[in-house]
Image (cartoon, rainbow, N blue to C red; front, side, top):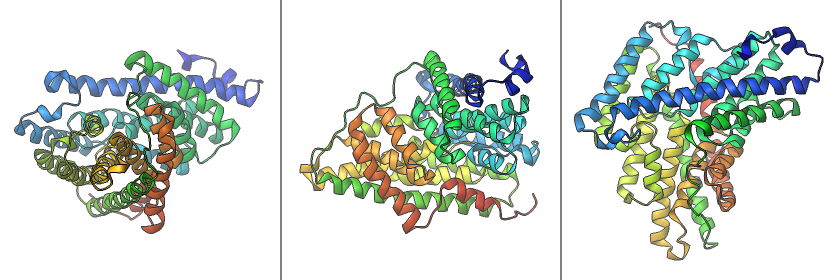
Length: 436
């Protein structure tokens, strides 16, 4: 209904430019919030129908045959679908969003968004080791872009609406409106102008309210208490950040390597191979399947022994880099949170064993591991810090989170010379692949 409003009035109103863009922020926030909620609802509906106990995260309860077949069938199905989709419409995700912003005057095609919506849902529901935040960002960005195109806004205004969609998507997906705003400014637009900030904030607010209406307002980890119990822990927190920084560098390099080595392989074979390999790894550790937020909960509750944590970390990195590197239309933000959480949990266990006087809540290490991995992989330290703050609603997480984020980001970017994963993948794509 909103899109049928008078285009001329909305695009050329005599009111101030900020007020006009803020009104668009309401429109984009509403539309993007609805799209992302529908995307999440589709995924959870399919998972609830397919998995035991109607639990959308309960892949561990499947039989061995089902654990193997879920990602394999998903990969084959996606490979078949993508085989018939023209190559230009297969491009999805945050990388596609950044490319559209930089090289296409912020104009994201509708058909790519459709590919992302259904392709991402199939990938996640079939148990592949990917996240929903990357697809949500693309869907939100495309919503903002398409609204800008519909009203024939110029590039500078369309890119702001694209940023509005990104912030709305993260806010609706994570229930983290401030992190959504910062991510849109820090990673997507690279701009903190007042003209951009206000409509982006408004979009995040609207999308959060829509998400609250459907999924509730509870924060994922708000019931957990975190506190540093000893100054000695500053050393172990810094160590956590350094280890996470090393893991982030391995993660980035591995994904770029898989992507470059596989570009000459036909898309059907690539995605089918991703399904086969993920199915094999899931037989060993089913915790790597799909989003993995239940695995984070298990780590917070100290349900894993150290050897199990290490095995999940290795296979989660492998499954994610293989799947996304081969071209699955999923996201990587969610897996980085899971990997970081498990690394943090492992360091927490070692710390409690070696330095009993530094025995803080194990959940502290889980949360700072999440923040550090997200920050190092995306090179988005402020967004990562704000994400864990909003997820926990606990100010005690800020100082240890900052320490771990700085250590991880510097280790990854300066010691291992790795850019953000989006930049690294973009550079990998610039190498001309052989024709399929």
